[in-house]
Length: 348
Image 1 (tube, rainbow, N blue to C red):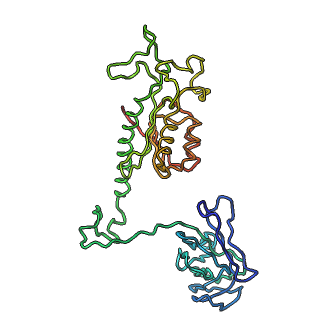
Image 2 (cartoon, rainbow, N blue to C red):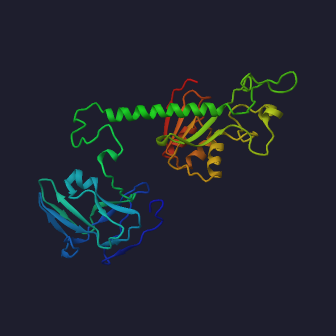
């Protein structure tokens, strides 16, 4: 069953009915099988096999009742094989089974081809998709002007022009890019809080020199991360590469990796610091802020370990600054998890 549902109760109306099944482990649709001919009230009016003539339709029951949990629906969709090969489609695609429906699910098959087609018992005729839906409260306003304004306004069918230049998509992409640059600026500012001293030279007094702004001189490992809701222009967590609470500060005692001569990119676990991504994720967790569906911004590709953490967060997107400290192949892990990855140019 889809994640979040766990299990769904089903009941076979007749013993020889077949339960819906997924054809492969990666399929989201459950194939359903023809069981009998019914009418709109669920009464049996015929048995299979039966032939559908061109331009005719028949309601075919699947012989199964499914208890759809709240707030999910079942969408009844056509099977591509029947539609493309035989022009057998659903007359009300997609059909919907509501959570309070306790009748047999029927598939209204329509023959849109020019040849007769026979529906056999046990034939796969449609597929079911379990989909979670939102149930909003409708709030009436007294005037049209009280509704949130849009560029399109009251323009209905055809108002965007059949052969238009796609300005809606173009404007949307521009706005995404604009917000990505805005948040990347915050990432860069956050990265300046890093106290990593790898590559920094100690002064005559044994300390690590800082410039007039308080930044470490010669610092080469300056990473930042923010987690944000770009649609709301809201940052929900920040992080930079630095030491966790209770750890010795590298800016005071020096770089452990330098001391041990560990090459860059190797044995990343031998380090006093936590990575920027770790800090941002744990910061959100510590205050109970969910990050599923949010967007993460970083000024360098995540290392392999961070990529694994990111892959498990269910964030919507990861935005990476191009040219940030080389390639780690961590993005391959992130992309494999279904997370959108955008790389952007950004001049500090």
